[in-house]
Length: 188
Image (cartoon, rainbow, N blue to C red; front, side, top):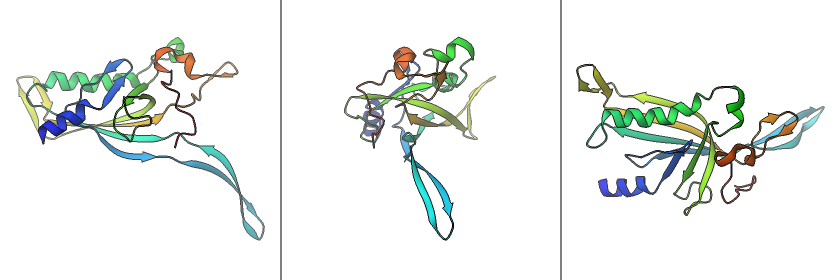
């Protein structure tokens, strides 16, 4: 089972703002969500009139697990967690229009769009970190035995930010915003 886990983890690619994240276990894709938006207006005596307003980006919920064991030391896990969550601390000003925006790149497995070696950009919407009650270490250096990191991300197809009166395009963000192999906005 450990060989299978190792192969599955190494076939999944996760890049957070240019830092490739080393995975101890295969990530769990907990959910995939695709929604549409309808505007419904009530009509007297009949069913509501519905107007299709578009669709929301595909959203993934990914769970990463880390256990202090072997080469996975407290410091390696601590650094990995820091590398993932630090991108959410983007300062304001000029950097909000550069490569410091919370974009991540994911590749591998067939749930990810364009799987088969193609890596796609996602917007990192948030992280939730859960630590176990059991700690390992000595002296003043303790770390939870098990750390679970949940990431919520949305497929990057159109950037919805406004610069002046012009909508920003993917190419406005340098390397971090370019959609590799062009995922169409209507990807299902």
